[in-house]
Amino acid sequence: MIQNKIQEVSKLLLKSKYLVAFTGAGVSVESGIPPFRGDDGLYNQYDPRTLEIDYYYQYPEKSWQVIKEIFYDFFEQKHPNEGHKTLAKWESEGLLKALITQNIDNLHALAGSETVFEFHGNSSRLVCSQCRSYFQVKDMILNNKPPTCPKCKFILKPDFVFFGEGIPQDAYNKSFNAASKCDLFFIIGTSGDVAPANFLPEIAKNQGATIIEINREPSKYTSHTTDIFLQGKSGEILPEIDKYFQKLIYE
Image (tube, rainbow, N blue to C red; front, side, top):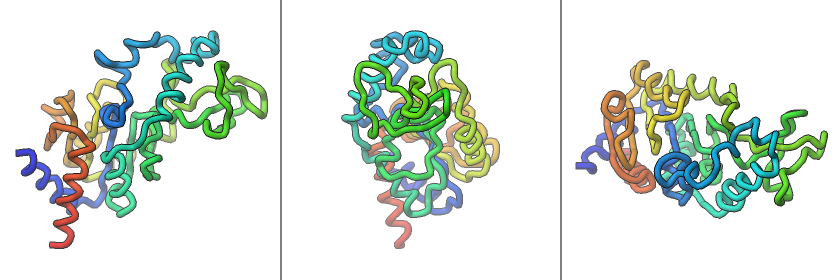
């Protein structure tokens, strides 16, 4: 039955003029990165206060030890999977117009995606809250103390959204704009629990887009927003959709 759905989605893909993909933690889980929430989530292994912005500046060394272990010692060992690569391929072919992600692990960029709206930021960058300078993590020496800004010597923070911070305005605006004008919207690996990102599928739906969902388990979208639900791993399903799509092109 899922093969019939995959073929149906492939036909929609062929007709689409403006495809948008919206990804969450489930995509990264397939690359070995645990989610933040759930029974196996990082919040059950670490004190979530370490990701609160006020706590970070009040106890920078305590917070940094956890951040370094999760996002730099561990994340750096992970690589894009076939789901990431298929989305990057679709963008390179002009099919995917925008990729909105809640993930901060930079795996979409590593896979080759370029038009990525990082709703919650990106752990591969550091930002100075004092002078607003940005630095690539790969250019910094990381140790057990949080790095300081080479320009003004203020403490740097990872350029992702801590608890207590707002969504980056540019990513917010571009994400909602893309959702409002797409004709096909893929929900991939997200449960719909985190606001305001979880409003994006509804925006697309209300503007007439067809909603495709790929998730390991049904989500908050499945019963009332999703048009076609494909249950399984995105790293397996997306390449299958692409295979059928390529066949359609040459028929």
